[in-house]
Length: 598
Image 1 (spheres, helix red, strand yellow):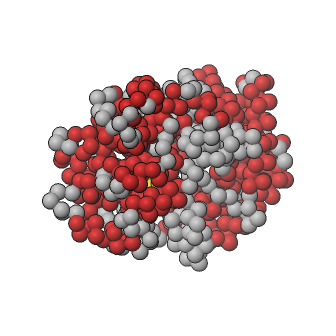
Image 2 (image 1 turned 90 degrees about the vertical axis):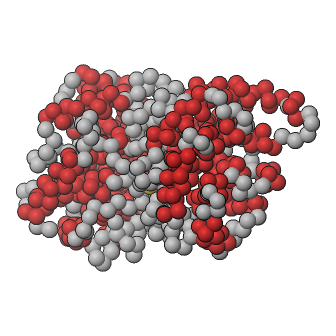
Image 3 (image 1 turned 180 degrees about the horizontal axis):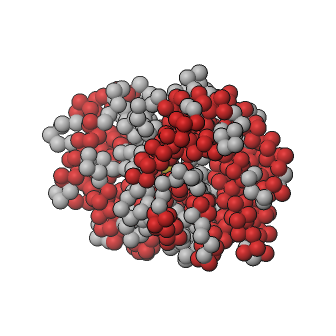
């Protein structure tokens, strides 16, 4: 693309991006339909109230039958390759919800696919397979196995192989959890209670089982669970988690409680017009901050003054002002959506901070929000210098594990806020921010691979050999570092070391470009709009020839097709309709900026 074409294409995409704003003045996006979420939802609705929810169960069931892969498997999205866990859950749902054997042909297809992978109808084989797939993290494996049992796919004889969940421990303060060596985290409390009670009631044997001391903790645990239900009814706004909890409580003989009622209402509301369910309500805060940052303060930014004002107000209103009732997180952070099931995290918080800096007008309210957000971030940083997603910890599970792309994002947010607000930040906070920046830089140095890449935690590529996405992680961190170096703050923190990391990252990205100009998760993997646009955005400053080839490939695409590169909780793949548009817009905007004065 030449300059004129790039300018024209940016204006076109920026206009498309603005057109995607909802009537309230921010972006909602749209997550792909999920076979796994749909399977869990229809089993939950049938377990809770089959008669009243029959139409919704039927439409979800029909969507599953229409979206099976040609090889007889199910993936997490309609475009995903099959995996054992999702296929097993869909098998359970079709077994449970079929009418007069109308799922027989589909079930035989699935059985053939599973058998080819050593998964027979033997319940112990199924149980072992699911537990091996998720490893030490029981957050998702045990709920999956519980649904398989509830649906009749695995017999009661296999229950002894399913790890029990100590639901009574949820009555302890959550601060104790990290010291109890639990293989689940506080974010999975609903599953720990609901699924734990189900497994306990199903495993009880003997005529004196009613005398078990654990019986005394069932009702208090359910009361604890009811206290955690968000206004929306959806735990973490997640359809699978909410569905697992509802079905297990009802199957345990505990249907009449707030969790089941609100959770069922949540599931009913979340069904799409095509019969499917997404994995989560939406990622509205995330896609909104991505959109604001993609447009930035470009002269051709079509955002009107009143639109910027509404965006600013929306983001400010979403900052948590109190301790979060679900996980006890301190005030100051942002979650991924405006709905009540969201919790603050270390990717959406930097995203909100950077978006607010783009929209900054200098009011006291903005200053306080930015400073409090930085305080929240510095308080979350792990001892290794990296930033985890949700909670400070020992890096045993994805929730508390440091990762490079989040660390780079937090580093940029802290440095830009420090640079922009300057003396308006109190000295104590400024010192903490400085220490946090130094630790984050060291973490990125230590965790940059020898080839110059970084691996992201919540994004991947289904077609790479290990399903990681080093192109995504490297492009993101490289861009964060380049943006950070524009501020006077990072110039005071080892600029030579930062530039060395950038140079190695750029070299890696160049080496990963496909002959057609695109980027996939690695070289040789088919390119996507998201990965190609992110690589271009990272390379515009120093590698324009590679960028021209990438932009040419992008310009030849017939549509802004979303690819399943996102990884949700428990390794669930998703695609988001906004990602290709946002990433491509940002790439064009950065390309325009790189040509200034040339």
